[in-house]
Image (tube, rainbow, N blue to C red):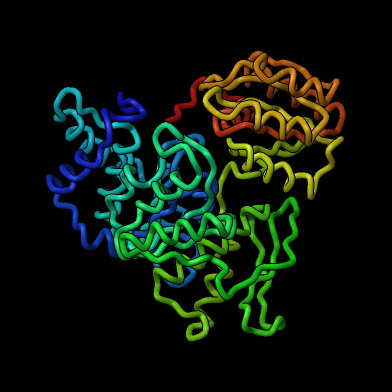
Length: 436
């Protein structure tokens, strides 16, 4: 993409600082508007929930997320509107000129490029708030340079250990460093209490505060349907009759956690005390129900039904498959499965194999692991396992069988697999997709 590698030549914070100076980025205004979102899973969903909540409070909100499913413009939005093509091209040309002038051995990476493009667009558009999803970690991530005074930590799993550290504790510390000194990081309910205590101690060394998303609050009565999750949200010190019922378009306990974490961070950023601003708080709570985020246990086609999910870690697949089975039948589901070779292939495969009984195993053109690597895991669980050489063939076979036998199709294993299956299902060529 743009002729750039995914990663640049080493940590790129100095390149970003040089760009900010060269293009006179208003650092104070950028910091004042910014909220950072970090974590292993759930960053994009949380960013979209936060965007909807702050919009419901009457503000115009920019949002920068990654990766994208089909078009790079998905990463840059104000409200639900993506960046216009002319603005994208204009700002991309500016960043390209800067990248081309960098000395040999100091190349810019693709994520840096897109981050700087977003900075230029948001500086031009001047939204009231900007929600930034970090790429990898926080300490060395470009998003750290916005100096956000509020951030969220959505979840922690072992990932990119060669960059972030070999333990969940070290990875959490890295992600906390996306927050500016003196700021506040809101911790998702998915963060274990023992880890939260360690995070709080580490954060305090640079004057940062931690706030559990559910401190003095509660959630209950979580249910999942094909239309999304429903739950009850209230305050611990208030009678149950004051609780509010919330409906989300995204399903799963994990999405409920993402939603309440986003709401709490939005309120912290706004300086909002719900007990003093009940009407605004309730508007934001309702705003959560308007958030959409493609590829997160999403039904993308009907007759027959095709669901996709981009989860790519064992915990993500555990949450997604449990949620799907809350409203779907195991024996009426045909799973298309493929996983990137760089992921925890065995752990992911074992979870999916244990939850369903009909499988088509394949590999994405982008980074897909050979099905021979995980085929035996599925054959131990089921006699109904078919190997398909590519995502186009897998999609065609799944559609034919689902139509004949009245099955629902579920594509699992990661973003590349999900996007390629959806593109093939719609009659397109999966190989034409361009990812970062």
